Length: 313
Image (cartoon, rainbow, N blue to C red):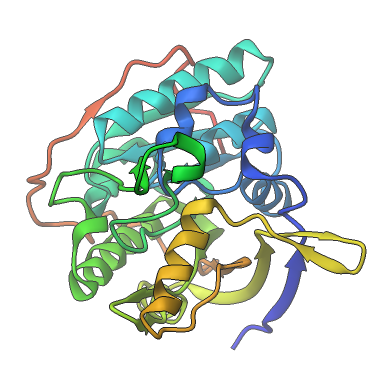
């Protein structure tokens, strides 16, 4: 077994909104489950070199792709929801306008069939960076009576979508089956020795703690990946000998409701980053996905140039 190390990264020194201000189009804040840009950038800097290819099979509004292009890498993503894919296009165009030297592209489709959606990238990716959904309701935005002057609490942007086929809406067995198929397809895209990095956190369903990091670890190893590292990526800040709270009002609101029900939970202060490598000796056969692709897929126009045959090698 490969030697496993554990590190802590101070990725929450700035709040998410500060990290995104001016770097992403304002509409990006609508997505309820965004990866911190500082986490994506740190992973990309650590595990790739300029000119290499980074892939995100569940790219959302394109955080992985944007940070990759700013760092001189090339990037490709797949997103199930058309509205988020279009925001990825807008964010890539914004990055290009602001001098990002890399190129990115995004496709709308079902990443359970990613090797067929991106056949030209099989065996070429230096890094796959992604995060599974952890329930249909996530960060979101919230305003209380204090903010609105009206009774009650108003929530918005707290759900991935209304599409029941989205993995975020599936029960745990279906979610794990789908994410396992995504990881298996991503192995085909990785070059020998390439890295898969997954940010993940536990979550609760009706008070029961779901060990999603543990499940993801097992799925990755089942797909043939070798576990090499676990990194604690802080969502909180560090200062003056104490933790600086970065939890959203929505997260705090949900935690308080849980306490009121008798479930003592706390706002999450970190995410696990699980890092795996593809074997140096596995050959790319492209035979893993031999069933028909039934999900819809199409390219989304982008202002960035497509990855050419020599890009990302």
